[in-house]
Image 1 (cartoon, rainbow, N blue to C red):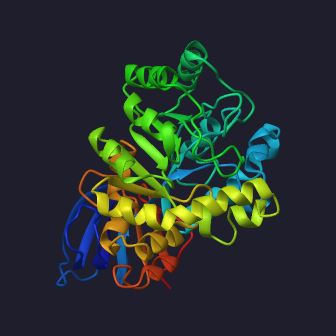
Image 2 (cartoon, rainbow, N blue to C red):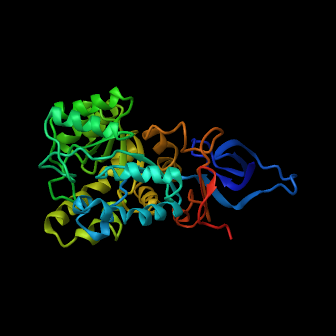
Length: 389
């Protein structure tokens, strides 16, 4: 059965200008056609979003399933028994979905939790966005990001990478520098070039890529030279760092919500002096570094880093820091899909793509806060939760 979605304003995520009064035709979860609204059609069944702004479902390009930053000690959350971690997943991902985020890139879980969650979502026993997963993060024994296991040296990393891919990882995640939530020093390097390079080689052998947690300093430059596809965070990135990322054709995933949202790191770990120092250091650099990133010409996407349901906040911060609103929307839709290597499936409203479509009350090109007023959510042709009233 074909469903017609009438759009008041359509932002399709491709880079085209937003268009007024458009129809999107959907069948079996896939977009069949996008065309001018035929106002002469009478009595045609469909979904009337004629008063709303319609855009692709949002993509959170950097998050986790089981972490709640406001609860504090995020790495300890990853080290809890799998059953305890799993209890947090349904609420987290339902908040994401009902806030208009239809795809999540999961940047590391223990006990293959993301593998089982993806399977449950695909089978329909768990409600949530589509998942792009890394399985275990690859972290050094003395480094940031260590969950229940650590991997040191070329051969340990090679084996771990192969095990992740065998369990169903869509890509590999490696921790190239220290981080805020562990107090390890956000500019310190965690791995050598050879260690990073072997992870890239194993990913490429299976036709996929590596994402590297990297705030700045030697670890960031080593990751870029080793061939990672996406650099996550880059809060300390200098002009020379950005030039290096451009030269190596890297994507940069900007994550602002975790640093600035009131329910982020400060609420969960603000009483810990080591973490508060790292947070203040990152905040002290990020206003300048992010403006530099946005002006650099680097390809970017946006992620909340586990601030579930907060993509509107993330996009609003990006706009506040200098990203044009249309680019901010693309960084959360079409560009994000390109970064994640899923642009053949989602990220834009075009014929042949999955019907991942949302609508908001207001125009986010003028007022980014409109993204907080989600009135319609469709993932893969199925409508969830929201009502157009």
